[in-house]
Length: 179
Image 1 (cartoon, rainbow, N blue to C red):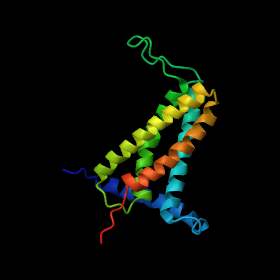
Image 2 (image 1 turned 90 degrees about the horizontal axis):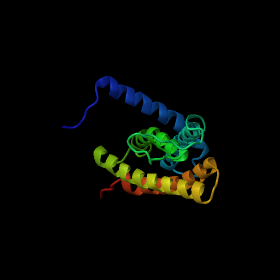
Image 3 (image 1 turned 30 degrees about the vertical axis):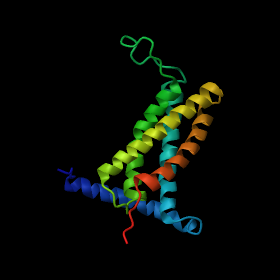
Protein backbone atom coordinates (compact mmCIF):
# COMPACT_ATOMS: atom_id res chain seq x y z
CA UNK A 1 0.00 0.00 0.00
CA UNK A 2 1.56 3.32 -1.04
CA UNK A 3 2.16 5.98 1.56
CA UNK A 4 -0.21 8.91 1.13
CA UNK A 5 0.11 12.27 2.78
CA UNK A 6 -2.77 13.95 4.58
CA UNK A 7 -4.32 16.76 2.53
CA UNK A 8 -2.73 19.54 4.60
CA UNK A 9 0.73 18.00 4.07
CA UNK A 10 0.13 17.71 0.31
CA UNK A 11 -0.93 21.35 0.28
CA UNK A 12 2.14 22.38 2.30
CA UNK A 13 4.40 20.40 -0.05
CA UNK A 14 2.84 22.05 -3.12
CA UNK A 15 3.17 25.52 -1.57
CA UNK A 16 6.81 24.91 -0.64
CA UNK A 17 7.67 23.43 -4.04
CA UNK A 18 5.95 26.30 -5.86
CA UNK A 19 7.81 28.85 -3.72
CA UNK A 20 11.16 27.23 -4.55
CA UNK A 21 10.31 27.08 -8.27
CA UNK A 22 9.16 30.72 -8.25
CA UNK A 23 12.38 31.92 -6.63
CA UNK A 24 14.68 29.75 -8.76
CA UNK A 25 12.87 30.40 -12.04
CA UNK A 26 12.86 34.16 -11.39
CA UNK A 27 16.63 34.19 -12.00
CA UNK A 28 16.59 31.80 -14.97
CA UNK A 29 16.27 34.47 -17.70
CA UNK A 30 19.77 35.67 -16.77
CA UNK A 31 21.15 32.23 -17.61
CA UNK A 32 18.75 31.16 -20.38
CA UNK A 33 21.34 31.55 -23.15
CA UNK A 34 23.96 29.60 -21.20
CA UNK A 35 22.06 26.52 -19.96
CA UNK A 36 18.71 24.74 -20.12
CA UNK A 37 16.16 25.24 -17.32
CA UNK A 38 16.75 21.82 -15.74
CA UNK A 39 20.51 22.40 -15.51
CA UNK A 40 19.91 25.83 -14.00
CA UNK A 41 17.50 24.39 -11.43
CA UNK A 42 20.06 21.72 -10.53
CA UNK A 43 22.77 24.36 -10.19
CA UNK A 44 20.55 26.61 -8.07
CA UNK A 45 19.17 23.88 -5.80
CA UNK A 46 22.48 22.07 -5.65
CA UNK A 47 24.27 25.36 -4.98
CA UNK A 48 21.93 26.11 -2.09
CA UNK A 49 22.30 22.62 -0.67
CA UNK A 50 26.07 22.74 -1.11
CA UNK A 51 26.25 26.11 0.62
CA UNK A 52 24.11 24.70 3.43
CA UNK A 53 26.46 21.70 3.61
CA UNK A 54 29.56 23.89 3.83
CA UNK A 55 28.02 26.19 6.45
CA UNK A 56 26.92 23.21 8.56
CA UNK A 57 30.33 21.54 8.15
CA UNK A 58 32.22 24.71 9.11
CA UNK A 59 29.92 25.45 12.06
CA UNK A 60 30.11 21.93 13.45
CA UNK A 61 33.86 21.62 12.88
CA UNK A 62 34.69 25.03 14.35
CA UNK A 63 32.10 25.62 17.07
CA UNK A 64 30.70 22.24 18.01
CA UNK A 65 33.83 20.10 17.87
CA UNK A 66 36.46 22.88 18.07
CA UNK A 67 38.61 20.95 15.60
CA UNK A 68 39.17 18.19 18.18
CA UNK A 69 38.71 14.44 17.74
CA UNK A 70 35.85 12.79 19.58
CA UNK A 71 35.53 9.69 21.72
CA UNK A 72 31.79 9.14 21.19
CA UNK A 73 31.30 5.96 23.26
CA UNK A 74 34.36 5.60 25.49
CA UNK A 75 32.85 2.99 27.81
CA UNK A 76 31.70 0.71 24.98
CA UNK A 77 34.47 1.41 22.44
CA UNK A 78 37.48 2.89 24.22
CA UNK A 79 39.60 2.90 21.04
CA UNK A 80 36.97 4.53 18.80
CA UNK A 81 38.07 8.00 17.81
CA UNK A 82 36.22 10.14 15.28
CA UNK A 83 38.09 13.09 13.84
CA UNK A 84 36.36 16.49 13.96
CA UNK A 85 36.18 16.80 10.18
CA UNK A 86 34.46 13.42 9.84
CA UNK A 87 32.02 14.19 12.68
CA UNK A 88 31.23 17.56 11.09
CA UNK A 89 30.72 15.85 7.74
CA UNK A 90 28.27 13.35 9.30
CA UNK A 91 26.21 16.16 10.80
CA UNK A 92 26.09 18.20 7.60
CA UNK A 93 25.29 15.10 5.55
CA UNK A 94 22.40 14.06 7.79
CA UNK A 95 20.67 17.36 7.03
CA UNK A 96 21.60 17.91 3.40
CA UNK A 97 20.73 14.36 2.27
CA UNK A 98 16.95 14.71 2.64
CA UNK A 99 17.05 18.32 1.42
CA UNK A 100 18.95 17.20 -1.68
CA UNK A 101 16.51 14.40 -2.48
CA UNK A 102 13.55 16.73 -2.11
CA UNK A 103 15.12 19.31 -4.43
CA UNK A 104 16.15 16.68 -6.97
CA UNK A 105 12.83 14.84 -7.03
CA UNK A 106 10.36 17.71 -6.78
CA UNK A 107 12.17 20.72 -8.24
CA UNK A 108 14.91 19.65 -10.67
CA UNK A 109 13.81 16.32 -12.13
CA UNK A 110 10.05 16.68 -11.59
CA UNK A 111 9.12 15.38 -15.06
CA UNK A 112 10.80 12.07 -14.35
CA UNK A 113 8.68 9.00 -15.00
CA UNK A 114 10.22 6.76 -12.38
CA UNK A 115 8.77 5.29 -9.25
CA UNK A 116 9.58 7.46 -6.21
CA UNK A 117 10.67 4.49 -4.10
CA UNK A 118 12.95 3.18 -6.85
CA UNK A 119 14.36 6.68 -7.34
CA UNK A 120 14.99 6.97 -3.63
CA UNK A 121 16.89 3.67 -3.76
CA UNK A 122 18.98 4.89 -6.68
CA UNK A 123 19.47 8.25 -4.98
CA UNK A 124 20.69 6.50 -1.83
CA UNK A 125 23.09 4.42 -3.95
CA UNK A 126 24.55 7.49 -5.69
CA UNK A 127 24.70 9.40 -2.42
CA UNK A 128 26.48 6.45 -0.80
CA UNK A 129 29.14 6.66 -3.51
CA UNK A 130 29.29 10.43 -2.95
CA UNK A 131 29.60 9.78 0.78
CA UNK A 132 32.55 7.47 0.19
CA UNK A 133 34.13 10.01 -2.17
CA UNK A 134 33.63 12.76 0.41
CA UNK A 135 35.14 10.61 3.14
CA UNK A 136 38.08 9.54 0.99
CA UNK A 137 38.89 13.00 -0.35
CA UNK A 138 38.63 14.60 3.10
CA UNK A 139 40.90 11.93 4.59
CA UNK A 140 43.46 12.37 1.79
CA UNK A 141 43.39 16.16 1.63
CA UNK A 142 43.45 16.73 5.39
CA UNK A 143 45.40 13.80 6.78
CA UNK A 144 47.80 13.05 3.92
CA UNK A 145 48.25 16.42 2.20
CA UNK A 146 47.79 18.34 5.52
CA UNK A 147 45.50 20.91 3.89
CA UNK A 148 43.14 23.12 5.92
CA UNK A 149 39.74 21.49 6.59
CA UNK A 150 37.67 24.18 4.86
CA UNK A 151 39.86 24.23 1.73
CA UNK A 152 39.68 20.44 1.65
CA UNK A 153 35.90 20.54 2.00
CA UNK A 154 35.56 23.06 -0.86
CA UNK A 155 37.71 21.02 -3.27
CA UNK A 156 35.97 17.80 -2.24
CA UNK A 157 32.61 19.43 -2.85
CA UNK A 158 33.60 20.53 -6.35
CA UNK A 159 34.70 17.01 -7.30
CA UNK A 160 31.74 15.23 -5.74
CA UNK A 161 29.09 17.63 -7.08
CA UNK A 162 30.34 17.06 -10.62
CA UNK A 163 30.02 13.30 -10.19
CA UNK A 164 26.62 13.67 -8.50
CA UNK A 165 25.04 15.76 -11.24
CA UNK A 166 26.03 13.34 -13.98
CA UNK A 167 24.86 10.35 -11.93
CA UNK A 168 21.55 11.84 -10.86
CA UNK A 169 20.69 13.07 -14.35
CA UNK A 170 21.60 9.89 -16.22
CA UNK A 171 20.85 7.24 -13.59
CA UNK A 172 18.60 8.22 -10.68
CA UNK A 173 16.16 10.58 -12.39
CA UNK A 174 16.64 9.44 -15.95
CA UNK A 175 13.56 10.16 -18.02
CA UNK A 176 12.28 7.43 -20.27
CA UNK A 177 11.31 8.71 -23.69
CA UNK A 178 8.69 6.63 -25.43
CA UNK A 179 8.30 6.58 -29.22
